[in-house]
Image (cartoon, rainbow, N blue to C red):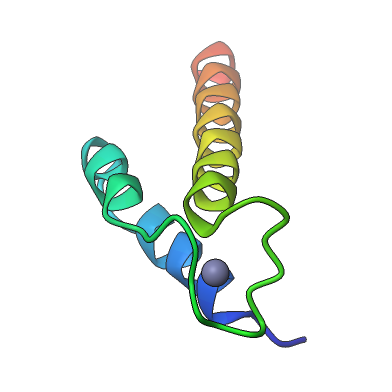
Length: 69
Ligand SMILES: [Zn+2]
């Protein structure tokens, strides 16, 4: 499975501390020159959507962990 250049950017940001996500997202181009982009609207909007989802999943996992512990 190949990951597009732009999706890889989102994955790279997801690995950084969450506090840095907003600045990293803002630094992304609205549109990009990559032909494999595949973003329906813009690179930045897609990265923001992806990271919002990641953030929600992390909060859910944290909540589960707290119930267990
Ligand atoms: Zn792109």
